[in-house]
Image (cartoon, rainbow, N blue to C red; front, side, top):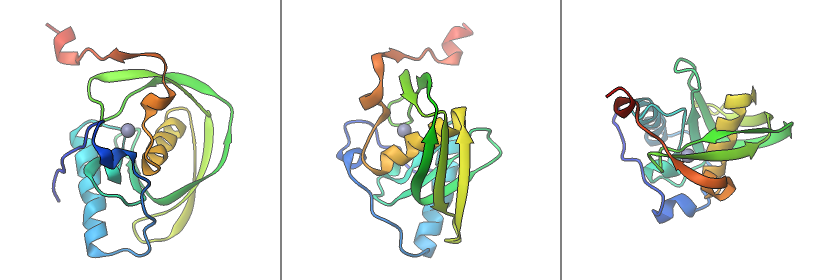
Length: 160
Ligand code: ZN
């Protein structure tokens, strides 16, 4: 496993539509493990393959830190409700902004064994799933931000 470099906004790879994964290969399995490791290292709640420069429809999400979700070729099946909250992205470090998204989402995806499954999420999980799926179509949350992007004060500065 290895930590991969996270691409930042402005990198054209983040604006591309990713390709479906047709089969699991050792290379793709390694990519998924690296994405999980990279997400945890960066203290993120989600990471999409284009964020590490790979144009495949793969994302990982973990909103609790102990429940990794692997999403391959994810499709949004259903949404409902609405939530507005602060959102950030590992590809735009130090920034956040308010985004309105559905409060509930049902997603169909394949896991790392290419087994299809359904996942439902509300609140933060719904937000994270939709944010990552947007990346697979070349979209960043900043396109949806209401008002100004804000600068995040890192914890270590607040403690001084
Ligand atoms: Zn993101």
